Image 1: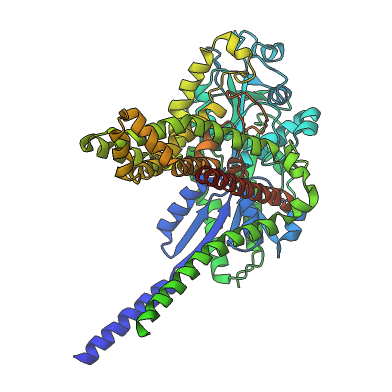
Image 2: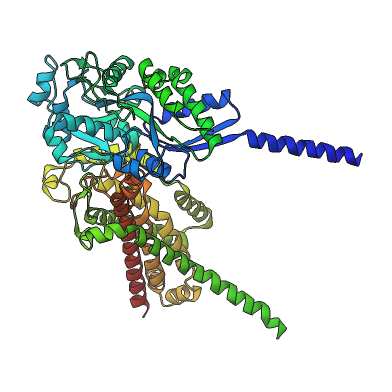
Length: 339
Length: 298
């Protein structure tokens, strides 16, 4: 009897140990911009593979880069490609793996104006505080037939450092030398005009409240917050609205010059139907992970996200990667040494 | 002799625990200073007087944040102190228990609300109301430096009002307990001399003045460090302005907003130095309040 109990206990313990050993926990940190799609992916993948738990903290791209460089997390995520200097500071070769496409849109609150079109130059001048009223000639010229009010423009920008700000300032700096000189490109910048709000949701909330407000938000916040967002003139002079198709067009056009390390900006991408304020979002993975078990689990996850997982993108306001780029990304992931 | 051992042990234990507080405070100062060293070396004393905060050009100055922190906190305590002290006097001196107890409960409930909830309430309720108020301001007032600027709703006034509501429970609770600690003999003596209730309360307030000053200072300290709620309504614009309707910025808010994305070492170090400045400012304010209390009781 006693021996039986002992045997049972041993069996139970062994089973518990085995189960614990089989569960692989991977932690990551980084960008907030792709957080909705990442959390969807981790949840869906967790349902298919109960032995893998991926824990992702959306603390911002800069924080993600810092933590993955210090190896306090296993993987990072960013919306702004790491600089050469940052890559050198990492204690090993870090891969940028593109995971999805996102867009940043000019969202505004102009009662009675309907859908507006902006150009990069006009947006730069608005965000520099040089265009003060909605009925300014520069805005009217882009929107013939729209009766614009004389309401003062209130610029709302992100107060917290953000990949969204990086993409936005990167685009405006390409469009306006003055913007590049006075503001520059970064996740946090010194804004000459307007007020700062916290997070995409804070910015979206203020735009809804203040008549005359204009801001930049990630596409899905504009859609779900039911805020008007404008078309943007692309390099070919087309008035393009952010959508899965126009983001994909930008990625395809940019992919022609895709560098092997994937650090490519696709803002202001040339070509037909491209939305000019589109961006990749990347996972940061070490090419030679110290922990092979976690490395294998992560590679499996990335393979799934780049193939079956892409189907979840569109519903959340992101665009799936074009097939061509998926192939390149899968080939890059294969370089990760997991044995 | 043996009976003394526990009391020696007890004395030793409390000494150790008390010095732990000192160790923690010093450790905070040391760690902040070490992490802030690159920024201290780069900017020196100009960090305190610099008015530019530009992460792109890596040029950092803290003055607008120091200004915004002190301005919003002082305005908050000016708004909060009369309400907090009035409620403390009412509850301690006049209120019947059936009214006093629920009031105490309600005031303390204010302290239990998380600051993010205050912030959301600020954005969606307070800020629109402040905007309406700003739109209704007469032009003559708008000309004055205290009310100049576009009617955004966001800004120093919203932040100060929110802070005032948040610090009321701290100041009110301490002031109430201090007033309750005034010996009954004091009051009885006042009434025996023919004092009116007002005069008796004034005598009690005078007796408790150092404790009441401490209560107000506790509220001020709380306002200086409040982060999330302020970051949500102050407009986050580093600008030194007298105007209470313009967006400004505080030290705690800029740390909370920018820390996660600060990828460059100097930028991160400058944010840590902001923390160090906040630490120093809080220390100085506390020292001043001690001095004030000491000069009152001397």
